[in-house]
Amino acid sequence: MSPHRPAPPSRPRPARIALRYVDENASAHTPDYRTAAGTAPRLELRWRWVNVYTSLRVVLMSGTLGMVFLLLGARHGWFEVSFHALLKILFVGSGAFYITYITVAEILNHTQITVSRDSLTVRHGPVPWSGNCTLDVRRIRGFQAEHYKPLRGSAHFRLRVLFTDGQDTLLLDTWLTEEHALFLQEVLSKQLGLENAGTVITSASPA
Image 1 (cartoon, rainbow, N blue to C red):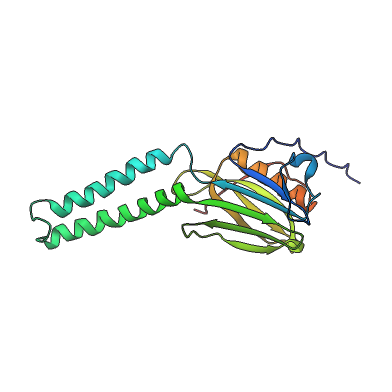
Image 2 (cartoon, one colour; image 1 turned 135 degrees about the vertical axis):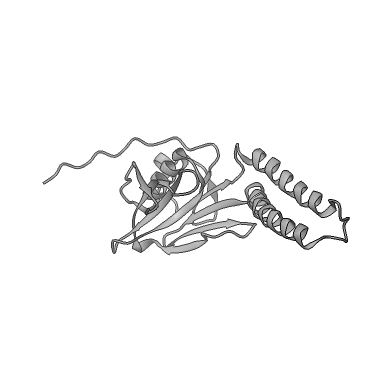
């Protein structure tokens, strides 16, 4: 029989992530998760998306919107836009809309995870975003932090949930650092009484 694997060391809570436990009387308290996990029927985790890169996105958003207005007013005036100029406006405008949407979401949005005795819920908002879900905790056997390397774009960290039937799915893929991914892996495992993997796996998009 293989020896029992020692539990990985607990991690301090990142300052960006707010954590609280809610008891049967709906009273919320915020003790150290390393000793309080599982002592209350509900765990709530919440963090805002604003980060060190938000200001750069705001500059990029302002630049792309400025280009749209310049194209609208260039040579032809506001109401005399040629077909060629219209194509430029549509091309730049679509990029401006994409960048603006992401930037506004990053400024306004937060993510909240709620773990109860029956379910685990993930919500992103108030700006609509994909990834909202509710899972039956009886199906969950663990969590896995992942360093993902896409074919295009920069590598980033995310969190997967592992199911008792051998399947898994992506749980979080929104502005996570390694510190955040490992902390969420640990605190969610503790709340549900599951073994904490304590490691990060690396994956990549298929070629």
